[in-house]
Image (cartoon, rainbow, N blue to C red):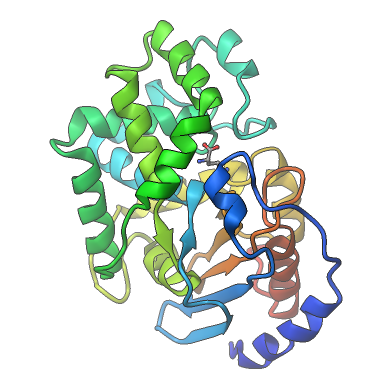
Length: 304
Ligand code: GLN
């Protein structure tokens, strides 16, 4: 499929999308971003590239990093992981506390904040220098050297991150957090603060479009089975209480972040990243979802 002609239609399509949504402001640093930024980049598994707008500009990937931390924790912990975190859609907001109480500290899935905190706990237990080792893993699998944390964004989130503190405290009380909660939170806030561009995201995530092997670096990042399962969790849980809507309209496994980024995968074909900072009421990029809906419909490339 040649995506070029359809990419050329995106600017016109963007004009027709209402200017709705708000930039995330509960993390003070994120409210400084220009709300009108827009970038998109698609990479096919045979390395054809299509991009538009601010696709080379780095932004805060926030919860998109939860897919990458899951990959590393799943590799290290294997199926033992699933005794500490589930694989069911939550149907609740990403930072909700409600289910944790009656599910005895076992989060529904690894992409809501509670689940991602358990994943960070696994990484703290398993890695000798969690922050450094994770970055090394990310740089290796992406082949991109200049990926880093943003200490400013991490500190900003730490100063207001009371919900995440509440979530991890409750799980610690239930016995589902092994390490010091400050250490685990520090890793979590840093992972959320990673900055990457649409182009870098789309290239990095290509291994999930090629059954676990990165087609550009040839590295096997995860097994075929793990790749299938991670895509399945993205399909069911990547957009929290809007996962059904994303499947319904876009029809690809994907993951959003409150920085306004979305990554989506078409297994066997491509990986795509889009960035537009204004979020809908569920915390997902308003324009990002609309443009992906347009794209998968016009290119007939939803998985459905
Ligand atoms: N760092 C954010 C938080 O914990 C991530 C949320 C998101 O991107 N959905 O609230």
